[in-house]
Figure 1 (cartoon, rainbow, N blue to C red):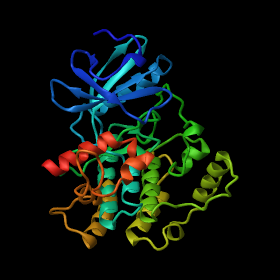
Figure 2 (figure 1 turned 120 degrees about the vertical axis):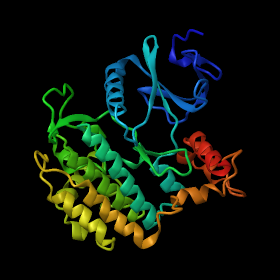
Figure 3 (figure 1 turned 30 degrees about the vertical axis):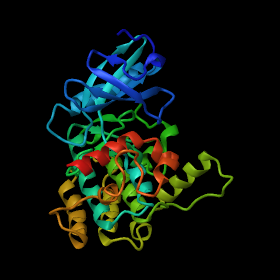
Figure 4 (figure 1 turned 135 degrees about the horizontal axis):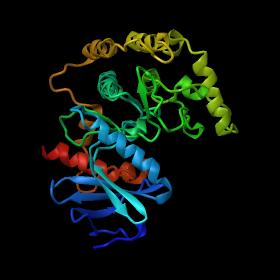
Length: 349
């Protein structure tokens, strides 16, 4: 079947004689449309992304990064299954992953256990070390861009957004990077590093700083910075985040949190801005959270908080027995397809 336009994609359409379209995913973006699909050859679920012609170069850039990262044997990077065109647009097919950490945080009523947060830190550091070893920095790490595996026993976390990623050499941006060296101000958020707020070139340190804000966000059940008034504009909020990050003292910022979190933020803050020659000690950073993890759990048989909660949900309709919260919560419903398959993997393994 020849498909000429994005809007023609509908259930049972076949892409590349291999991928069957099952339906549209709700979390659409202005630059692309997402569809759930099925790979007839591998017998696995996939995500089919149709990107408009206007974003073709950016899509090509991201695809190149994914291909480079997948040349190694590392984990935590989504697998690019296929890339092609539906004139005039671009189509990419990637492996189907589970829900993102933001949605799982909502599912758990914004309460992750210390053991789960510690394991998130350990796994995220594994993924970041692998990405950094290939001389890339992500520049835009947020809970909604970190996805889990659909396999029950897998602890791996996947970093999925590479639109703002940059190539670096010895910690600094490579001279061959033909993309703007500074972040798009529109993507700044509470998890962005100080360097990105100031418009400075990104480094590996910035990814670690963003991870630190994410971990504090989980430890504090959501809020990490003082909020502006209700009438504040987005620009006001971003400026407030920037000022609070610039004046941040780890001991104060992490007050009431485990000492390991204080040590992590202190270590990141003490690192050189561009990390030119200084080697990042990922083992030390992981050890901090392994120590914290061991205080609350054991490695044998450990499961993330959401796995045990998933057991209480009905596989057929994605609802907990006697509770329709997921179907009523828009932010959860948008990822219901992926969540359902998480349940299936958990309950049938």
